[in-house]
Length: 274
Image (cartoon, rainbow, N blue to C red; front, side, top):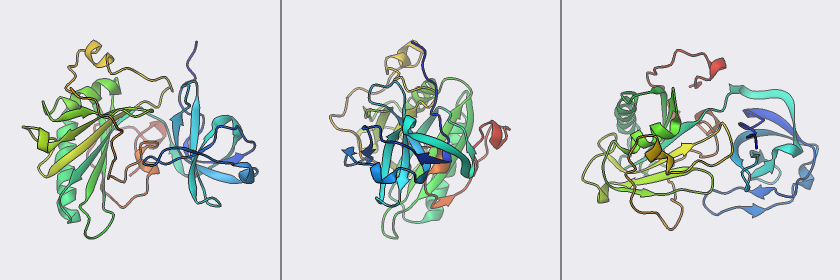
């Protein structure tokens, strides 16, 4: 069976809802999926915010924001038709590693310092093509978090394993139905992950080039040692504002500072637009 490849529609693409597939759900990363009737949306135009594999992993669901329902919905690609218009630039799908760092700092400047140190550590890894980061802060009295996106010249799953290998302990598996992930906790570690001031971190390998799920066992086959010893009984709850269903550009920007990258590619060939 030939894999279908990446999502048909790009993030930011304006699409028209032309039917009802019967598999539509109200998407919520924390509360879980809830079936929803999208009949009232037929004929309406919505913007693509992200994507996720179908339950049988034979294709993709597009994640769109429905203003009339005040909800983020996951709908089958076959009920959508492109209008040819985009919000912002065209943002190609590329496999990546998403890293969400939780800190105890409330000052944005301090959080940016953590982000720069973490980005520099990641840039030093073999085969890293590009790194970008963003500081998220929900409120004045809530500690800031840092989201980093890392792209590889080669296999992003290998890069995922190399990121985990930066600290030898404190990791637990936190796979969710869509992606392979691991969570690091400083309280269970003898080391420091990426930068001073990081207390916990979620690291996720996100495969956008096809819906088929890859196995964590491939890490050993790729010559990388798995450092995760315990599987979480429950999906990790992320405090970061980063979205698991979209590239970096698609998530609401609180504050952005680009970092030096190893890529000289233009936005048309896949470089991140900061």
